[in-house]
Length: 387
Ligand SMILES: Cc1ncc(COP(=O)(O)O)c(C=O)c1O
Image (cartoon, rainbow, N blue to C red; front, side):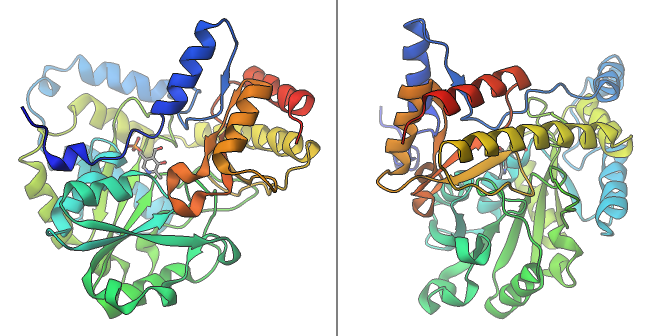
């Protein structure tokens, strides 16, 4: 038996090493606090759970769902995009449900890339921006996010040769892992860049509503011309604490959305109807739980920022996402600093290099642990970490 090259060459799962370290320490009786993984600790809002229960009790949901999505689901996505982002989506041609954003990020590569094509992948970035193209027998080329540009890529600096083979670009704001947000004309420049170079923009909008300090994140599709050059991958995972539910949507350019649907009819049989109804309840219902959750994250963010500053680190509070992206002190790599925090404080952080070469020199800390654990992590950092 021989496992195919495309799977054998996949890089190791990002958190495998961290999980091993945690398991070893836990087995030795050490209480480890992990700020390593961004998986919300708060529960899904009750009205969403109730819609799921009601949907699950309806035999109409027990048969194969349609890959186009129930009308109610698509109406809810379109309604949300209209009210939240000011974006008009056509129900019939511009929305297809996703089993989470990760599905969309991986499979859009199968839709847009032929072997030998290039995908530009925001670096640092969500690891599937690199492995998705690999699985399509294409090549991911890192697109460095430049700290001096607010963690935007320098589109002018991409070599001509790369542009000639590039078919798509992955970007995402509010950004994982840097926490950066868009506060300028980056999206209009990206649309112009996409048109000039015939490159499809795939905007990963996984953190749209996890924002702070009055910042409101736009949809890429709200930019004039965006729907003709790209798609947005939207997820309910983070806004509604639904990472376990696998609910999202691909929206935007009708030709790409239709091609995505055609691919998908060969990959899976759609999203469970009850989950679609729950997702519709989340998008169409009160957004107060989202605001409340952001208040919780903001408080945690401020606690953690204060603790890191106490031990001498330079950190700016992000305006979005559930992460702090922190430069490591002089003399450390992201890996050595991660190791030191684990050894001194029994706190897990993620080495920035795990998100791409431009992540070297940083660590990422996640805000998704319960308040008392976060407070304990803060205490340990302040008391035990010695730089
Ligand atoms: C930037 C980014 N995109 C996509 C995802 C995947 O989201 P989903 O749960 O919708 O698959 C994540 C999850 O952490 C993420 O950080």
